[in-house]
Length: 441
Image: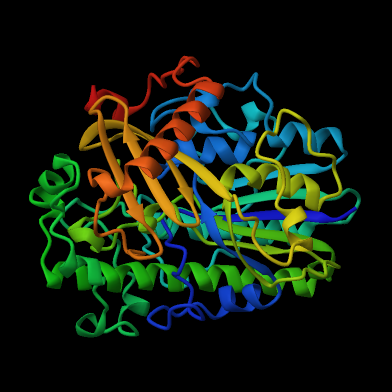
């Protein structure tokens, strides 16, 4: 039976890979990519940590499991992925960021802590409050687990890093990894074209309001500084990934271990004059990296541009292990795409968002090869982008008469999906310990 590892980062853009964008330096992620299928059309179900992670666990959209925002709890009575791996005789292991209320153990992961001797900081902050330090710790747990692994039963291991998610004070949200910062001179850091091209006119008014106050009141200098720190954090993450790849090779495990690498959502990085994340529809947030290394596979394409949802991640992990994907795992599996030679003509994915720390603007959206459409349920506002003519999503054409027929078709499609999948019918369980819930009520 094949071992399975899922490795995730937090807030990594899809193109934040060195061999894709040379302004990054990720030689170990590049090494993994060389052995993997890369899904370039992977779209997160939600551009917020907790809802996105609920999807990873369940193969469902966040609203289907009542996890609309940070501070909501994933119900441990629901089906989730560890239960299926346990039933198949796997040892289930979880290290790193959780963010779903309760604990991984409450969702039947059998091993959720491990020894951390031999921890290598690799330039991480020694302060345990910082994400780089937490990631050094979960990396050490993973390395020690793999070192001790005796092969008596296959394992399913989830390693969830915090980086490059910010956690420093809000005026300087991205952690500085001094060891790697010099590799990314601030004055050479790129600025997204939409920083200059998009004044957010014609967009929902709250987007422009967001761009003009608080930490999102951006300058070129601030965008370049964020870019430098973001890249340095990813370089540190890459060093940790290299140690894990080396350990798998040393233990002769790499040839029989499937690895899926992804991120819960991206980061604006100054695109559209916006910072960090929030109730926004842009590709910088929704398009995520997704790599799958599957031993023995002979895919027809090594780069698959088909639009796929991260709702398929749970089923893909099971399928990679040779475990039948249960009906409860509605997102299905990505393995069937390995036999395709081209995308289907009617491809589409759905996504959603509910509330950010700076505002509540529930939205539902659909993306096709040609279009992205978003409807804000409470604001009664629309966004629509012609992705062929406007791939950077600058011009909102939702109000233009010549696009009305397409707009109505997309709206009807996304509203039908929302109704068919339950809408807001699933009641959320609020975490009484959540500071985020308390701050945003």
